[in-house]
Length: 228
Image 1 (cartoon, rainbow, N blue to C red):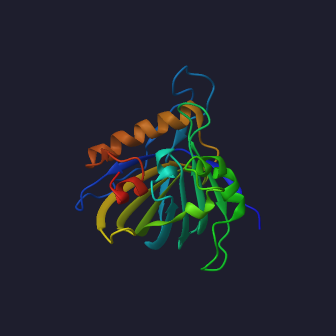
Image 2 (cartoon, helix red, strand yellow; image 1 turned 90 degrees about the vertical axis):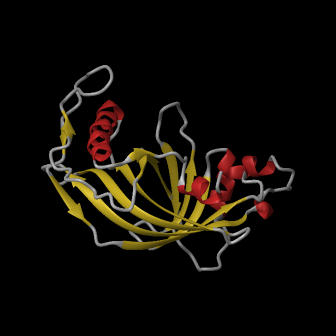
Image 3 (cartoon, helix red, strand yellow; image 1 turned 120 degrees about the vertical axis):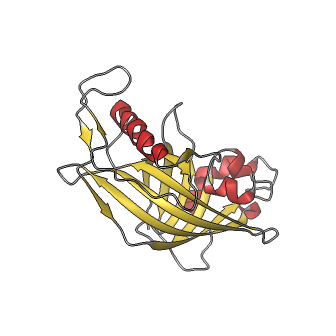
């Protein structure tokens, strides 16, 4: 089985339990929006499609000293939702770019980390003096997420942004500590990027912040769940 790779451009927000995702129809930017102007096309939300709430379960793998997290890398196996599988998230290749996300299909419940993903982080794992490094990997966090996804579409039906409303429960494997929180994630749709994509996220951020969202104080669900 082969994996796929994509660029993930998203913004995360902390929200209180009583916050409600606002009406996002009409959010958009004009042609040439963003730094430097240009000839980009207009992006505007014409309608919102709401998915039924989904239950996602993820097991995050790292070394005991959180070597991957320290390098802005996350490795997880997730079930539930439309993108179940193994996910390896890597730092941007250029400053300001989105994170690279490598997907690998699910196998058996007891399968080890796929070799194709281990190869991508082999050098990083080896920095701890663990031989090939793979032997140091272990589950470090169990995440249960109740996700309600809002798909923001243009007038042609193309997805511009997905806004995920997540209620999260994280259990730290080392000591069983549980932490819960709620957050919103706004991720650009496939092919939506560049200055226009950034401008669209800026405009969307204004609408979300008016509804009570705050720019996230943590780097990732893994970082918050582990307490780093």
